[in-house]
Length: 148
Image (tube, rainbow, N blue to C red; front, side, top):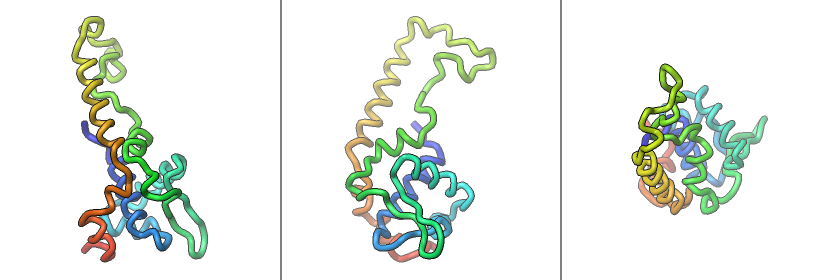
């Protein structure tokens, strides 16, 4: 299972905001800290706002902050919300050149095995909150300011 860049950036945004709960943070600051595109982060932050994970304040003194405590933000929920398609294989042919389902589809066991694997992956993520991600060395590094 490989997460999209969108989900990767969403988790980085949340980690950054979780480290800096005493103040609002700008998109520019996060972009500089992780050396990623501000333009892409705008889209990520917008989506996180739609999901109720972050709040944004415009104008002077504005910025981003967590919408709720880090202990109430479930990592599995973030991944489910930010991933457009969690499908591991395209049994139905949505992405095939002819649009037809796989010929093995009616009798395939692989789809069930992969479904179980995805369920196990998400089950592990469901055991963690954002607060669990803020106890390690990354939090200490981010507290120092932008990485050079």
